[in-house]
Image 1 (tube, rainbow, N blue to C red):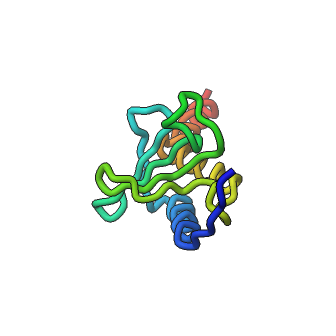
Image 2: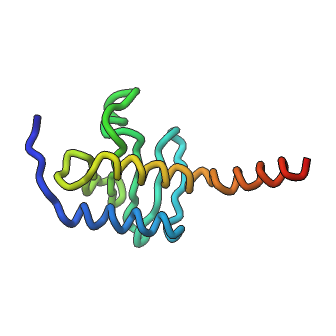
Length: 119
């Protein structure tokens, strides 16, 4: 097993992403690949949410969700549970929040509930 390094900037980035996603200030969108979501940052960066750590290298993926920052096609960092101080459960909670926002799950549930109440 590799050495886990603490990166306080990555931890802060994930905390900010969590807060801004929770407040609705980040416009997450689904991608053509099921389970992957994307949000633009500052017009030149892209943050992608993956359902598992090894999603791109194995079809079924393994490990908790991960978040990867890109500048164009160049990967700048991969925020995973392998970074000391990044909790697996926190990644799972963030990914689920991202998924629900990108797919507009709450809006769809509101529509369904409204229809059911009117039956």
